[in-house]
Length: 234
Image 1: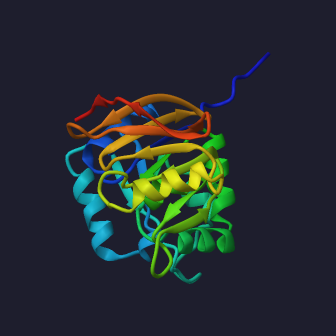
Image 2: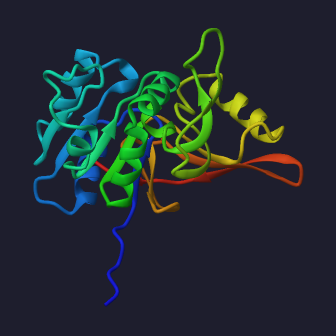
């Protein structure tokens, strides 16, 4: 008898993964009251980020919980796999993508997240929480200037968050793709996002008017920015 594999699901936003996106993430789990894990590695487990997460979840039929990474073994008695694989969805915070990736690799969290993806646990986030799933993209994680960061590569190609919110993002992303320093990929405005099943784009969504997503590539030697018009979520 053939047993179908779970559907791999990733939901991202360019910025602003707040109540509307968490509501949609919860619906993607198919559970009446899903357990949603917040992973705030990129902000150093900052208390105010965790408080915001609980506030965004307060009106939703979800069971929110947080997994810190700055821990010690006396109080952290469960392994990363025991915690993360018990969730129905994992929401990754924004913040410093470079530090996030280094910590996840050192702790083996990157491996557990891939297993979560394979099991059909919904993954997602905005900014560092969207960038982390792609092969590469642009980041403000280093001093002085935006730069390239390599990530986990669950989704092929590159990504730029905050496409409408930070003036340097759009021209740099286009130039890096035009010159072959970055692979073609997806750019998202704040509060606009993409839902992938496996590596296939299934839906483009936004939580505010005029927020859009884009597929950026090179066509006939010139940069080409294809607008991906979203459906509105609330």
